[in-house]
Image (cartoon, rainbow, N blue to C red; front, side):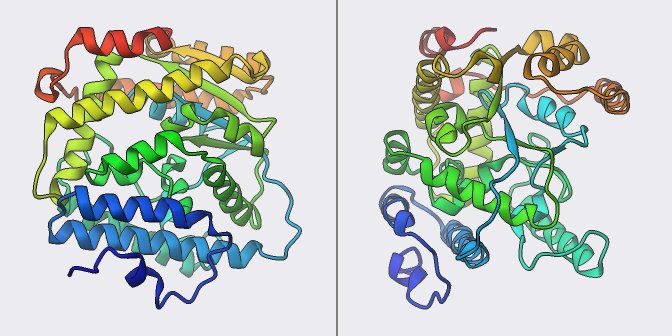
Length: 370
């Protein structure tokens, strides 16, 4: 059990070609942090080993697919950014209704290979396999589904794809890895965006969209890296009062991490969550001013919730997209269903995570337009 989370045990018998060695440094930081700081229980050790091994396996298959091929650059991407738990999913889902947009689906992220055609028996089996894996995840983390409900055929944020570079906040949601978090805050993320681009090239081999629609809250802190790969990228940033979003992020982290650890410190989660997102928003605020204004649009959460279609029209007009009548009708229907369902409201107290309204406002409000 001592070597369950060691680079040697992960790579010794690994036969795939992982491409460039850009994974070695983040993998080393991640494993050191997991082994020395995470205090994982047995389930946690197996879960993290499975995650890392699977990410390396998918990475090797992607490299095998793209290696020595002159592939076309992926279609123009649109990035939905902003703090987690700030309405990004609602906005993302509305934009996904446009047939001009394509987002990676959950099952494609979990099991992308071998490539399958929609409607075939292999495609249906891939979805069933994803459903089984997600059912197991719900068994381990029963409190997570009401907070972040998701189906295998849903579009999902590219947080699950940046793991291919071993530079992803996903691991921090699963385990206490403060040293790895500091590494993420201070390292260049170009390799993470590169592997996202390669993943999209794989998906495009069977279905090239007009635009890729992507979402990952952490992208707000890595705008230069994104533009180095996608100079034509567009960004839609949603702004919400951090007093609403930060305790929700803390609660999500607590629910995700609790099955895998022997020790859960809510106050440390609060402290590190606030520090991480303060750093990300500060970087985003500094770099966004260098981006052409025609590529960037800001959305206020309250205005979006009160008048979602009006905000969608403003987004399309600003970015030069065509909002077709069919798409608009689909969006109207989605909004009506969303409002009728009256989503369960979750109450998360700042105090239980060692935070105060003043500390959160002082750290984050200057970077948000809510």
